[in-house]
Image (cartoon, rainbow over all chains, first blue to last red):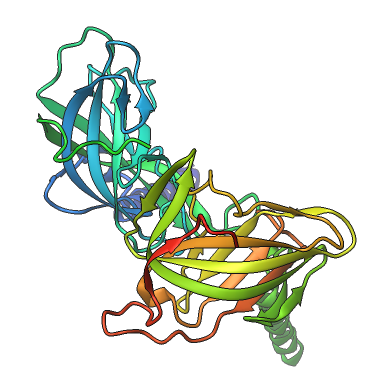
Length: 197
Length: 192
């Protein structure tokens, strides 16, 4: 009787120690910290690193007319334009920049994909080459009849490098994750005339 | 006791052997990679389906291009590198579509996509017995110009197919860091 109770107590203690150890290890690995960290607020003045890209936001403004940097707009429509200097940090020419900036803004429909244009000659989404900064314009078409906002909220999304992916064993950039939020004041139009293609 | 020790040692040896096999095994990307055909500037580099000879390399700050009847000048953040290449098909008609410029540090610059409307650029369709010239146009950093390699293949995923690797040799730099023979504007409206 006493023997059985003692062995049960022993088993309970061992299980308790095991559970405590597992929780401690998870805590050390950061399982409890990561979840509740607030999204960092990125400063416009600093360069933002998203893994593949270095971003330097320059300015944001609302434009209207038939075209914005050669991108067609709906009649009477307006567009939110973000000018950003982008540098390819990787070793290969790439155009994997369609998902790095997400407009979190009521003036822009969440499903709207921006036109992305090279400001030098209004080429629509060209490849950018390693280590060569270029000015790009992200153009989000605004919902019809919306008042122009005074500030523009964005979510910046980064990816991580994998030497070998799980499917083909090839290197690549995967797992898009938000790395911070960015708020820009919506100012006056571009410094110089838009280059039409 | 002796026997037990021998077993343990055997197990360790087997583990080490298996680990060695695992780390020395070529990866899938290497196994299915392109098959290089090496050459120098001016050599005819023979691949499976095509033959390429890089005739000359020119550098310029700006490019003058005809676009729908209008002449336009294209600027760049780095420098334009224009390689004139003669292509020939070996046994059957094919298309050469992909080229990139690999600098001395390994940075790979794809052909520019800003001039896709211009004539005489890749992709070129080539037929046996009818050689054709084309221009390969790259935007590169000035420090990636010397001792670069030109990579040419028929298609983007040239798995287990030949890729011409043409080493372009050293390029003397001028006082401003650009190659010495850099011209201000290269006229692409001229025939190749």
